[in-house]
Image (cartoon, rainbow, N blue to C red; front, side, top):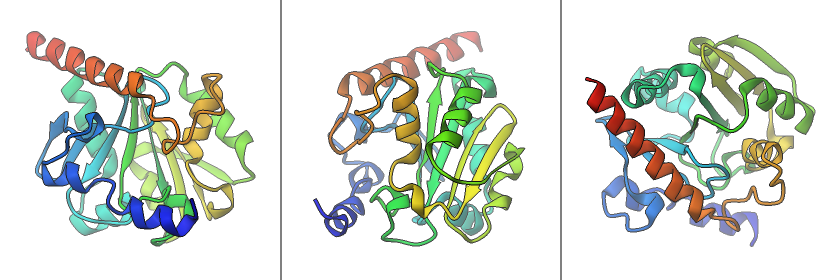
Length: 221
């Protein structure tokens, strides 16, 4: 499949989910607010892999944040609170293209933020593997300030607890960068591409984990 074909098909990836007519297991909302939807991701390399998808169209979460005056980090924190999790039990990240039609956006051209709840690896190892995966300059900052460092360039952002790392001008690192990092950490390095490896069993595991945590939180109220 050529990059052009991937981009054309990718633009429709979240259409059914956002319209409330998704039938695939990964196109069914787990949590909804007026500004965003949480759903499991296609190609979940590990259980507990979620997406936050804005209702307002934007090419990346930086643009979405500027349009609505919302911090993507606030959305992550709201999901954590909903599930009764502390912020150090979540790794979140984004591939931020500077414009439409680039490999950095993973062929989707619609903002989406990845969350892994209770991941099988820690954030220090995740960052170390990311640093070794590509020749990029990473800056560490407070999670709430991460998007201010992204400027107007392409970017990668990853965070956990109250810390984040940011790299800019990331086109050379290619598509699905953090998926490749996660796959490498789990010893499943060849199965990172969501187009070829849907990981349906992990999507099911994600839904089960989400509902279990959600239920436990409600019982604790």
